Image (cartoon, rainbow over all chains, first blue to last red; front, side, top):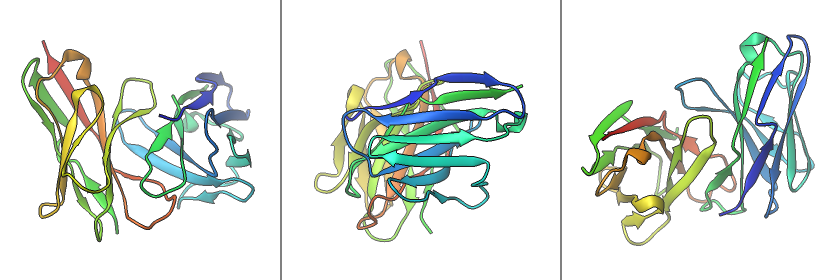
Length: 116
Length: 115
């Protein structure tokens, strides 16, 4: 299957700083990528849909000014958590799929963010 | 609205016994159906999907799932469970002709296989 990478795999930062998470599709081009957040022992929460070359579409309740998403190329999307606070601590997972509604989504390994 | 239900938060199975993880969906038409597995602190790994044709779909690691249109179910099964199968399992759905929209996930079922 296709491979999606994420970097970093874990990050610890101080409250008030910004953190950037990268998501790359390594062996395919992804016009669309998805960003999820997962709390401990809970399901995935879709945060936003990232489209190459255009603005991301955010889910209701997700602050677009806090969670900045940039999809500058067909293989890279970034999520920046701005002015991070302890409540932003979570497991962030990106995903991408090939074109076609019958195709599965391929997930990155996730990024564990801890805000002190 | 589309939805996926995984009625069991936790399933416990003895090693060597068959396992079933349940999934039902509420989507108009015949959707595409998916199963994923997640190990601790990892992303989701794709197991299998139903697109069309044979209702019994075989996937990775010996898992299979059966599409039942009348019951709107897509239960995940394995004939003989392994301790290494212990993980979090997610069922997901996407309507046909919906383009590259995100999958809709169930809340997940934690499988524990006991030696």
